[in-house]
Length: 114
Image (cartoon, rainbow, N blue to C red; front, side):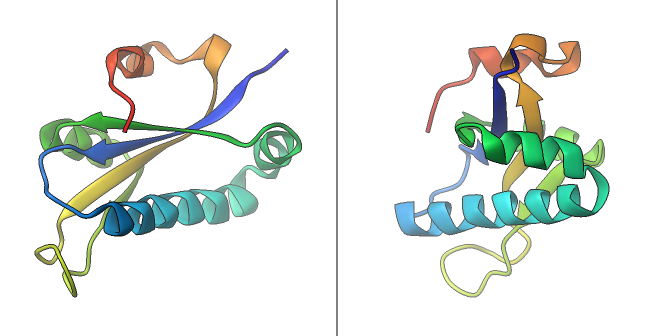
């Protein structure tokens, strides 16, 4: 049985309030869900029928930039409140079966929860 989880990685190299961070994570979830509704309806339906797990993990900015360059959903702040414009705040890796994590993403098992 699949154990589907959405993985969002947060930039541990920036200082941000909890509220701002929650908003940035929300953006990452919304953008991925929107993209999946257009391109991968089956996985989003399967995910939504389950427990809708979201795993939020810290990583460094350079790692986020690498993932962004590979096409993962990334969120950059507009800079209207706490952060400088274009600050990379988080990357959403997508919905992944915990029992079948792609080898290139195995590093997430070593990251710390937010």
